[in-house]
Each structure stands twice: as C-alpha cells, then as structure tokens.
Image (cartoon, helix red, strand yellow):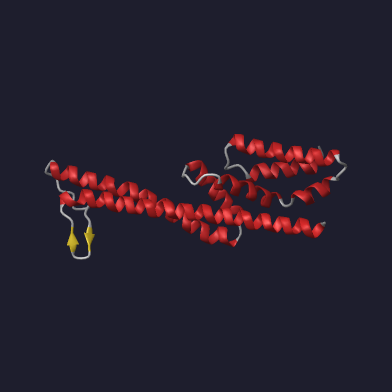
Length: 192
C-alpha cells in the first residue's frame, strides 16, 4: 500500500484512540480492506482518499455510531464522547458538552445525595449531629429522621434528570450522524 494511504489510516487510528482497541482495530481493518479493494479495481490513491473523505470526518462518523449503539454510561463511552466533541462542529463544541456535563453531574449528585442522607441519619443515631448535611426547602428544614427519605427521593430525581441529559446527548449525536450520512448521500448523488 502506498505511503499516502498508510498515513491516511494512521490519521484515522489517531482520531479513534478513545475507542476500545479491538473496535478501533476492526474499523481500521475495514477501511484498509475497502482501500485494497478499490486499489484492485484500479482506483488511484488520490481518488480513494477523495472517496473516503476527510479522515477526521470519517473517524467522527465511526465514533458517533459507536457512541449511539447503547445509551448506557461508562468511562470508555465518556472518552469516546469527548473525542467526538473534538471532531464535531459548533454543536459539538457548545451544546453537547453542556448536555453531557449536566448528565454526569446530575447522575453523580443523584448517587451522592442518598449517601449524605445515610451519613446524616447514622450520625444522628449514634448521637453525633452533622450540621453540614441538611436539607432546606424554602423555610422548611428537614429533621435528621426526614433527611434520609428526602435525600433518597431527591437523589432519585437527580439521577433520572442526569440520565435524561445523557440520553439527550446520545440523541443529538445520532442526529449529527444522520445529517452527515444525508450529506454524504447528497454528495454521492451529485457526483453520479
């Protein structure tokens, strides 16, 4: 394979670094096999690169598809989302970071809130008051006994809100992928 095509594959692999190694290797192999097939059909290196498009855009499409496969949260997926932001346009630079950061923050708060309630309640049972942990809603201040159920309720609400923000992030990424595919389809139709 020519040097220019190897450099193209190296760029793709660099942009796909946040993905799991096995997934990244499969993608690079898939692109490489497509390149070899095109070369076998007599297509020049420049035409192959033109057909595949910008390596950054191609990697972004693969990252987006990888992210959109499942809506669950994982650190690996978070790193892929961050990489996707860096490859995405203005929406990726402004809106996606806000929705994903809100999602992560609300989910973390949803986990920490009941833990704080348990600590406050346990402290009260052993005779140690923790004034730093309290729930104040308007003029109402929760007692040590009501802090625990309220913290569980508030934590559940925060976690659900965080999950919704995370799902919104995934939906927006899927939307960006669809618009990119439509753009590619329109470009292909115009070339034919």
